Amino acid sequence: MIVLGIESTAHTFSASVLDDDKVLSLENSMYTTSEGGLIPRKIIEHHLEGFNEVISSALKTAKKRIKDVELISFSQSPGIGSVLQIGAVIARSLAVNNNIPIVGVNHCIAHLEIARLLTGFKDPVMLYTSGANTQIIAFQEGKYRVFGETLDMGVGNFLDHFGRLLSIGFPAGKRIEELAIKGSKYVELPYTVKGMDVMFGGLFTNLKEKINKYSVEDLCYSVQETVFAQLVEVSERALAHCQKNELVATGGVACNKRLQEMCKVMCDERGARFKPLPSKYSVDNAAMIAWTGLLKFSAQGADKLEDTVINQRTRTEQVEVSWR
Amino acid sequence: MKELWRGAEAVIYELSDNTLLKNRVRKGYRIKELDEPLRRNRTRKEFNLLKRAASVINVPKVSNLGEYSFEMEYVKGIVLRDYINSCKDLSVLFKQVGELINKMHEANIVHGDLTTSNMILRDDKVYFVDFSLGDYSNKVEDKAVDLHLIKQALIAKHNKFWKTCFDAIISNYKDEQVLERLKSVEKRGRKKQ
Image: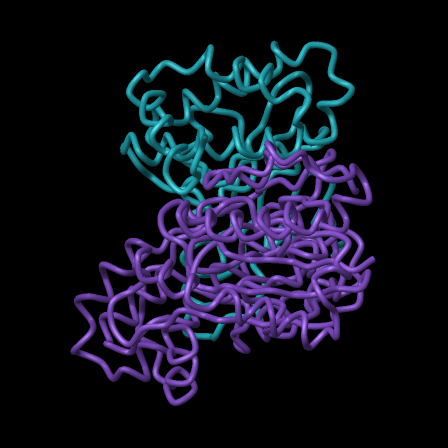
């Protein structure tokens, strides 16, 4: 079955064509900026300018035309409301005008489903870390449930805030990773783990005081070591608590090689398995939207058009998982 | 030494019929500068917390503090996580849990990792174990986070019964300020509809 996926929840507009579980194409256009952070109005401008080209080139690379598409899947929740709206309107227009069935999917769950597809893991604990989201999720009693999460800010959001203190642009994660490699002296920082939850707010406040007293490289190194250790510790607690033995890490922050390495070491030490994802499937991408749409469609058919309105606040555990 | 249990951060060995050794193991994913102070501080703190908690609630008795380890009483019973599905009266059981949390908080101790895996039932009495993430605190916020943790664990792990269990806990929890704060803790980080 040929599926067109459309992702539009935050900074990335993405389109992807799948033939069942084979990714035929994946095209992204990401909003970036040298200063400031995510400004919704600017993201909207960016997405409206670029969507046509992104979708067209996804179809072209896949050697498909819109009339070949048998299902359209789009990110329906959660995200920035006005940005979600763009993806939803485009998806509905394409579906109605070309008489194609449509399904809306949850963005967070799409991250998890593509991770399961690519790793082949049956029932993993998932560390999901992006700008807005920091959650430890596992499947239990018919739903994806959140076992731990940040009690204040998302880890990517934290890294971007830290990046702004250093004036290194948005998103900051990649640059922090590069700088961290050159750092070697650990600067003691607050480490807050509560049960399976983490916090970064106190760390951020603490960093503001340290910013001119230590080298940027050592601070980046220490920040990574500290926050990633927090994330890996809660992942390990979730593995122990849920009695599971597979871990996947997904979301933009999970592209970080040091975080992947730490996940691997933790899993090796406890006899569990970890597989990193290719970056393009870890960041926001439409292939995961198409794949999850296909899973949903196979289990319960298309959505009615009136059910394709966006919902910016849906929680992971509210989503019906009809396909598992 | 027989290894009895391997948790997320510690290994528990059976020293004798009624004594266990809890040893915090080195975590290879953490750099030494972070790993060693964390393990040392947590070990010492947990030991002291257990000593203090023993005067108000049921916890294992502790002795012989080392750098990364201490000895403790072997509480032989059933872990609540495994008992919930066969328990005849969850309300009675969790009223006791609520009473323990209440007493513990009154003594200004927060557990930091309240889950059904960290509660053991022996001779009809509930014991709290694993204070590795515990703390001394009189803060409303910290106590509310403790309640949030057990609620979250119940919802995630025992979804069919969570409300019965949590309502029973709350019915025995006295501090209104903490219950009020729980609402704002839940809103934070989790965007409810």
